[in-house]
Image (tube, rainbow, N blue to C red; front, side, top):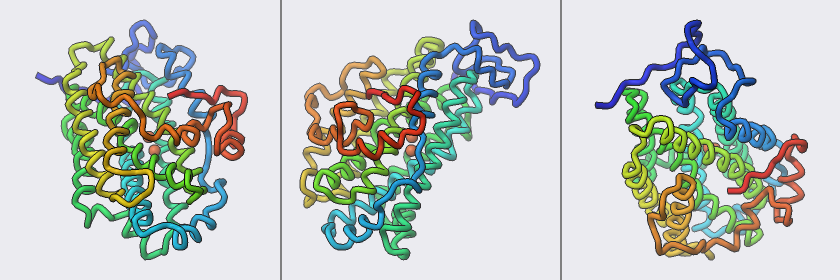
Length: 347
Ligand SMILES: [Fe+2]
Ligand SMILES: [Fe+2]
C-alpha cells in the first residue's frame, strides 16, 4: 500500500535540520534554509553551475535576421517543424515552471529545494525566451497557433496530456508511489523530451540558418542539462535512502514509453524532407540518448543496438562550455555572468 506523503509545514519549530538525520523526502525540516549545513554535495555543485549559467533572452541579438530568414530561406517543412517544435518546448517549460513547487513541497533538504527554486526560475526564463522568439520571428497571427497547436494536433495533445496526467496524479494523490513516478517523469522530460527538438535547431544552425534561435536554444539546453542532473541525483538518493520506493521496472517502462512518444512525435513534426533528419536518425538518436540517460542511473542499456549517435556532427554546437572552441564560443561562453565559478558541466 502506497503511503501518503505530507507537505512540509512552512515553519515547524519541532523539526530537526541536523544533516545526519536529513533525507531527501520524509524528513523533518524546520522549514529554515540553513545552507551552511548541507548533506548533498551534488546540490551545492549544481547551485554553482546553475548560477554561473545565468542568462536572459533579451540579450541574445540577431533575431531580426532570423525573422527574415524564416520567410525567405526556410522550406515549408522547416517552417512547420520550427513552429511545431517550439509549441512542444513551450508546453514543457510551462508545465515545469508551474509544477516544480508541487514537488519541492515534499522535499526535506533545503539545499535540494534551493536548486529546485532556481530550476523553476530558469524554466520561466525559457518561457520568456520563446515569447521573445515568437514576437520577432513569426507573424502575430501565428503566435497563438503555436501556443495552442495541441488543440488541432492529436499527437501533441496526447504527449502533453500524458506528462500532465502523471504530474496531476501526484497533486491529486501525493502518495510515495506517485512521487517516485513524478520524479521519473521529470527526469525523462528533462533528459529525452527536449532533445530531438534541439537536434532540429542545431541542424538549422549547421546549415547556417536561424542562428539567433540556435543561440537561444544553446542557452536553454545548457540549463536543461543541469536539470537532468538534478533529477538523476534525486532518483539515486531515493534508491539509497528509500530502497522500498525505488522501482527500476517502472523507470524502464516509463523510459520505453517516453522513447516511443518522442520518436512518433519527432517523425510527425520533422516529416521526411529536412536535410540531415529522418525517421531512422530520429529513432537511433532517441534510443542512443535513452541508453546514455539510463547510465546516469547506473542502469544497463535498454536498446543495446543503439550504440552510435547519428548527430555526432552536431556535438560542437551542443557543448557550449567546451574549451576546444565551438560555434557559439564568442557569444555563449563570454556571456556567462559569473566567470569565477566553474561553468563546465560535462553531460
Ligand atoms: Fe526549460
Ligand atoms: Fe528543465
